[in-house]
Image (cartoon, rainbow, N blue to C red; front, side):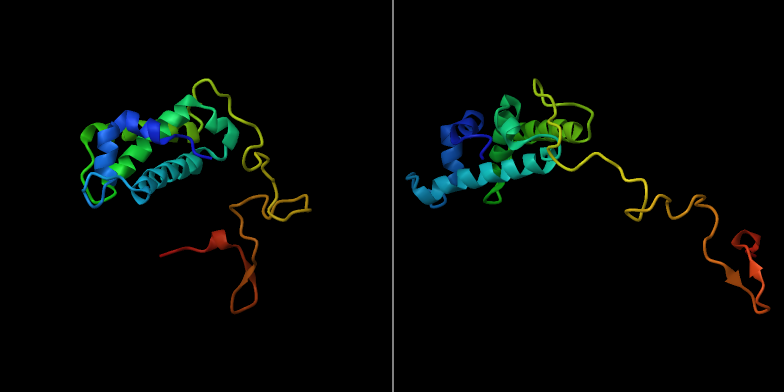
Length: 167
């Protein structure tokens, strides 16, 4: 499910800007193989967005958001710009940096997609299991500062690990 379209990317780079970046033989004729590069850029952008948002939002929610469409188009535009090892314009770099910062804030729980509440049960469960062994009532150690293994000396006397001195 693509979050942006070729027209969204063209809004950022212009039609001529997109054609310049996908015309590999530089003859001015855009072929089907050339247009596939725009779709690859959009797929890359969708992957980046899903990587950050998948645990908080469903795909349908992401696809219906204008903010996500905007983000996907900017990330795809950056991918197109650097596809043939060309330099990316600083305005595109600045825009994508701002977008990535916003996406990271949303991923970390410091913000939400504008106008869209986070979906529940979209990713992994938020339940935290209190024991290390499933089905047991007690955790491995009640006091993590006390050793559970008993050590013996040459005389077979048990010693506490806290009584050892390090010189």
